[in-house]
Length: 436
Ligand code: XLS
Ligand code: NI
Ligand code: NI
Image (tube, rainbow, N blue to C red; front, side, top):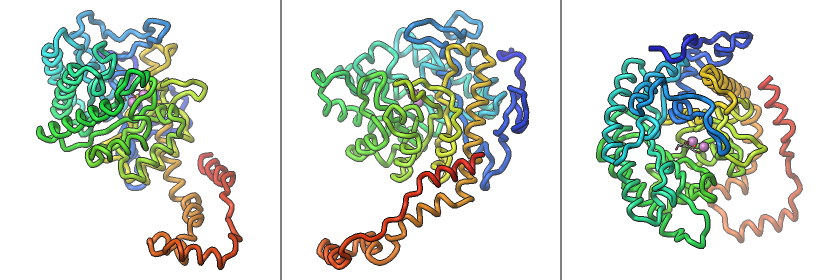
């Protein structure tokens, strides 16, 4: 059975092609800086947006039908799996990411939900082998069901904590069964609406307890991949604890979890935290916790997570620059945590959206490689800090100086006489020159 009829395998046709169903910039086997584009970019499909989301919003029902021709939820879940692999195959996407409830519908009881996951994960494993596809990461949806109205790991209700733990245990097992090298924590409702009813200290301690329990359990069943935590400052809760990379880092260090967790940075979440995407990536890279990316983009005029397919090449270029500088992906990759607009409601739109996103990142990779080879930007930054390579600067960096010595140095100097220009506009123009 074919779900995306009339759409064949998407091929690279180059930048002059006018065929909408072709890649203009993503040429999977082309080698850039010693690796194929496919290896650099490690594209993944998000099961929830691509296979499940029907275009609903706060004001209206779905505009896209995703029942795959079935009325029974389990039959629909099976067809969905077949459709998912057809789509990945046609788009040459090697990985996918999923929540437990995306792949198999929740049952009446936990036992029934788990049994359903067993059935569907058998099918997914079979399809992975047939199509040569892999799981990038798995996760548990601990935010959709009404039991999670006050959070999961941070719920004031211990029964909810226990239920979330049970759900995560199973999600980890399924991730391991499917060979995933990543497991994500996104604290969908791990935050608060008002401090008037919240014991923030206990909630954060409990979240750390849940993460520690998960790590220990996952390691005990042979999971040797990375745990990722995905920062987001707000939505759906007013204030989420995993606000941004810096906040999450402090949390992980406080609870001794920093050796097991890396960041899954999402572009739109950076925007919501009033940071650039590159800032979040840089903080992760500088602290050796860069892990994976949820590739999307927001809208600068809106204050919520619009999860649009990324098409802004300036952003993807600066992103790929950080990724290359971080040494590339190890267990992570580029997961398109993105959905077609409510008005883009055909199956073809899903393909056009992935093509747009993949081409934008392919361009980003090409430009990042140019930035690095060109060397003007890196060279400028190195030169800007050159005063720390010798003399008093070197002593400061080496920890080889006292306050009294610095005072003596400054007294002798009288005042600072030179400060070189930061040349922001020049560097922005270098970027344009490299891009166009
Ligand atoms: C929502 C998050 C979510 C995570 C996975 O804003 O981005 O989709 O990536 O739970
Ligand atoms: Ni995400
Ligand atoms: Ni998001």
